[in-house]
Image: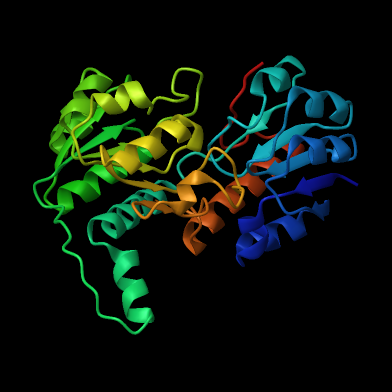
Length: 319
């Protein structure tokens, strides 16, 4: 019997058709509560024909130990930075993923973070919950400029919603979609510096690569407007933690809204958890019933299609 390791908690915790599809597959399913560190993945490696994974550390060592039994890795989601795709490709292990399933949900989460910061939501909720009536003056989004770094599926959805708020939108992407930009009045920035120097809000929607790691750091923050707000629903490592902490403490950056951290889950003393002008959510930007069901169903279907010899919806590596 095909034995599958399932680690993603939102898949496991959210009801929906994906459970019925997986049950009907006839596979033996073993569940763990991810994201799993490399040490735990190494303990489990070699016991499974397939992984349905989230942000578990699937390193070259894990892949090597998983052979010859492991046949496929089906990623629940789109981010592949926790999987050593190069090592998988070298060993002819397909890495499947689920693009196009969570862009609406993540874009909505961006505005949850932004409005929370600009309207002082947490301060006001804490005040009324404690029996008080303290008030702070917030800011409108109308006529503010939002800079979008990465105009892919999610970045485009952010742009559409920003225009609905009456915002000015400027974006940077290597692969520019001029038709979309014209349709939604998005101005093209030809360099990141153009985004950094002009935007009131900066929203990050790029993959984590060696080039984007620590993109937001002391040097790039220095180019930004005083009082900028930075939003991160991409990957925590795109923002250098110590540098953003310093900028938040000085007021150079007025607020940081993030759904991702460099350590997940974070230690109790993680510095971003202590700052009143930083809002951190626990990597739930794509965790809605609708999005989870889409992602999970696609991950299961990818796995089943591959096992049956058919072409999956999307594969990250080609042989």
